[in-house]
Image (cartoon, rainbow, N blue to C red):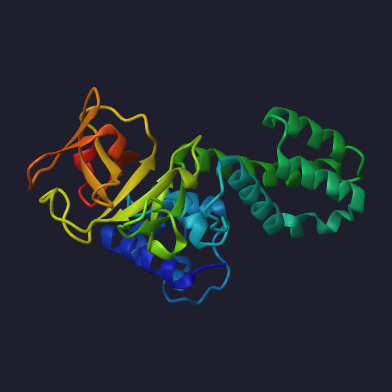
Length: 296
């Protein structure tokens, strides 16, 4: 679903960074009135992925290509998605958006099914797809025009996939409140969601966020701050980690130091604590917080 107000607000923020809507329009090679209509919620249909790519590149870091794809309805948000399933959804969405361009060629149902599978499933490399499109178009009277149309659709899909996979993908990560039970990841403990750009070769399920409920890591982290954690148990000394203590019945955030059968958590605003290894369940390493530079 196209979230018009979110898209409008992002365009306003980008426009403010340029000083005028005309400067943004010039930078992206779009018209001033085009952006004005989106800002004023007068267009119901979202821009094409190609235009979104231009906006993202011009946004000065305010947004990403993948965030715009989500807001404009090209990538339905499902927490368990991975990169390959998102590739398919994006390809399918762009193909459907361009399907009207093929209506004048009166393709048979079987031919349309073949083209759909070729362009959406994308099981072949791009050069092979282009060759198959050429062979396919040669069967029709307007072979050259049909081929050009198919290549245009294919190029749109291909460039969008390249951009998606270069930037990772933005997905909502559940924020959990601290819980006195070992099973932290209960839906009843989710207080909100925060967006995060999921790197390649990982899933949104590899991450969770935790609502901070102490000031032990102040000024780095304070009460009600949020940290994003990449799940894992193979953690290294010096990393800022999230652990669960069975004796304290809570999650703790601190800098990790391991000594044989002792685990030490070092805090910024409190004395370090030591635990027996068996008392600690490793949840993962902190990779992002309000003060992101602390985790680089």
